[in-house]
Amino acid sequence: KGPNKVGYMGILQPFSDAIKLFSKEQIFPVYSNYISYYFSPIISFILSLMVWMLIPYYFNMISFNLGILFFLCCISMGVYTVMVAGWSSNSNYSLLGGLRAVAQTISYEVSLALIMLSSIILIMDFNMMKFFVYQNLIWFFFLMMPLSMCWISSSLA
Image (tube, rainbow, N blue to C red; front, side, top):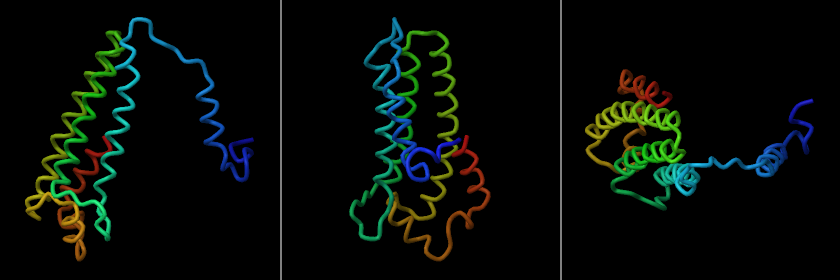
């Protein structure tokens, strides 16, 4: 039948999925560190929401002078949540998976930081609003095409 049967054109489908998910039985790993095991995804979600504060608006509601640096810090802090989640389950396989994810994330963050450094050198400022203003005539995506392709491949990895 499909998801379009719940509500009008399936609009209520995400809500019914959420109710179903929250009503399921919760499994507690026996030997895990409970607090760090359950709070590391929450902290990761909070860090990803903090990055949204950097979006430059026309009316300059929030203006960070060091927005790019804040962006790099928020992305780098996400590594610790993955490591803590793998460690706190007290399973060797989860720990190895977490360490593998940390190694991959750090290796891609280095390339992303170096690509962003080239844009920072072009503008000579860490402010996201300046990035917005400087790209009125030509986008940096077209100006630095090889770096843009590297940015896309690193971001999607």
